[in-house]
Amino acid sequence: MSDWIERAEEQIERDYEEGHTSPEEYRAEMRALRDEVRGAAEEAAEEAYWDAMGGRF
Image (cartoon, rainbow, N blue to C red; front, top):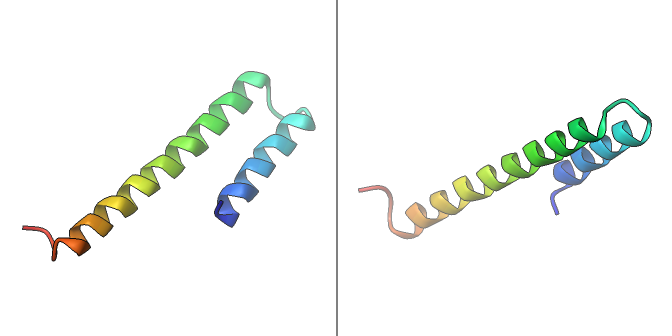
């Protein structure tokens, strides 16, 4: 797992454990992080595809 993702998860967990966020906020923040990671992965996959195909047509 990427370092920034791991650090972000740890910060979200720490904020929750220290009482800075509610259970709902914790779940929303973790969901947003997963969505961000998924979007970045999809973008990287698309770029790799187009690089392999010799560029966009």
